[in-house]
Length: 109
Image 1 (cartoon, rainbow, N blue to C red):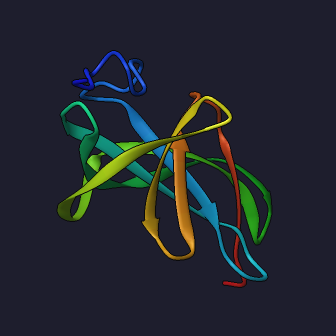
Image 2: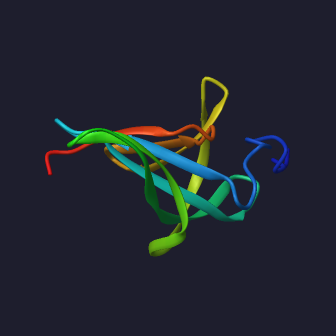
């Protein structure tokens, strides 16, 4: 049986954004924009973030900044977890489909 785009995560299209929140003793947030889509794979481009609120000197919220591409595009397989699309970025980072909300971030700097 052939898998179609509609079978695996039909709501993931070119322009969709994935977000990950990761880190140890701080919360890093990374955004990835879909620049190409096949039935089971996406090509992602990491993009920067824009600070929306500053809660303390070391925490706040961010959203994606589409004007700041970072690094080279890369291709990953789309998975679903609890019926939600996600992609494995690395051994310590999994990104989920962004829901459009501001994301909490913190740092030591």
